[in-house]
Amino acid sequence: MGQNVAVLGTQWGDEGKGKIVDLLCESFDVVARYQGGHNAGHTVKFGDKHFALRLIPSGILHANKLCLLGYGMVIDPAALLEEIEKLRALGVTIESNLKISDSAHVILPYHKALDIAREEAAGTAKIGTTGRGIGPAYESKVGRYGIRVADLLDAEVLRAKIEFTCAERNAVLGSVYKKETFDPKQLFEMYVAFGQQLADRITSGTLLINEQIRAGRSVMFEGAQGTMLDIDHGTYPFVTSSNTVVGGICTGLGVAPKHIHKVIGVVKAYTTRVGAGAFPTELENEMGEHLRRRGNEFGTVTGRPRRTGWLDLAVLRTCAMLNGVDEIAITKLDVLDELDEIPVCVGYKVRGATWNTFPAFAVAHHDYEPEYRTFKGWKTSTAGITSYDDLPPQAKDYVQFIEEQTETKASIISTGPRREETILR
Ligand code: IMP
Image (cartoon, rainbow, N blue to C red; front, side):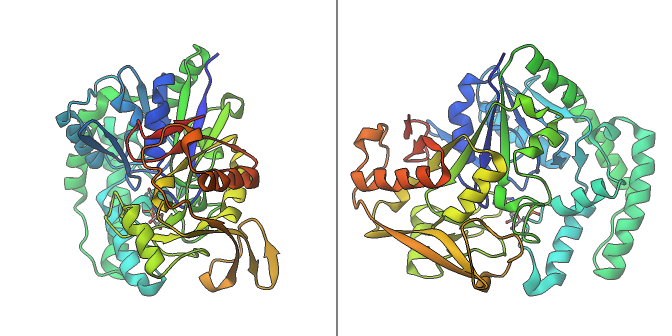
């Protein structure tokens, strides 16, 4: 029986999942994504090469790994084809090792246009989406008029669906938002062509992954975004539109819970967030700027500067609970190297009550009064350290405290962006 492992983000995304997935990949036969779309951005570095992955699991960079885009995803075929071409140009083999679930939903240009138009219209109440059409595509899915990957292979069905949905979306775009509308005929031609280009990769993802599991192959489930961006459990409405938590694997891939053997939560040594919404430990000062600069905290997809702040244990405890996290991977520990002191949020006062998990009801920044415990900084470089014993004692204290508070073991500690800059315990 293969050992199947989930790797997911414990904060608001950008925890460094890409590196961890890439690092662990060798021991797996299959790497599958279960939610999200090209709002995700993973950067993987090795040698002098720099790979930007959005839709395709990081497993693609390794030989003989089957990579699957699960049906819980929303897929922009143009973005997928572009990503395939870019990776191929860097020498990555993408043949029958990349499969797409036939029942994943498709993002169309009107989804993207609606995403952008709504954000513009919302003004200061905007979510700060990636503008990739993710939310509107999931809305189409839940509204039961979405277009699925399999529809790209059936011209008559595709034509009818595009005509119906485009008319409706055009009405909203044109009348409500005063934006340009789309020609259904042109969209149909574009999407039929995408279907032809992707036909060999389209398959029943659910059958495929379950056959692999039954055959004893081991699967890595690659999460995108983070737990606090989950549509149900995150900081709604400032979330993405999918289930980023471990349960999303069951619904987004058709894999039963008993096949998920271990959950690894990726924890950045401090916190970042892109887009709007409460961020109790945010640092809107010089220190925040320091973390942003040292941690190179700029979005992979949109290039936006990320908001930065101290580590928040209420967030991590919530995440450990929701996902049954077994082990954690701490990333970017070296970003804290120069600090004299490192405060860690141990809980909050929220409207007068004490919370040590994240309360779902409070979405406004001013609802939170974080309580901190301050650690002594180690003031020495940990960059590139590969053995736990070589970490300065203060850094070990920091790691141990996170372990105690999340009741997990930090089995991986990342001390730099490259594969080799890692402590494996
Ligand atoms: P959407 O997923 O584009 O709809 O964006 C919704 C929210 O999720 C926004 O705050 C985005 O900044 C955030 N988000 C989406 N994808 C990512 C990601 O991969 N990393 C971090 N934040 C993300």
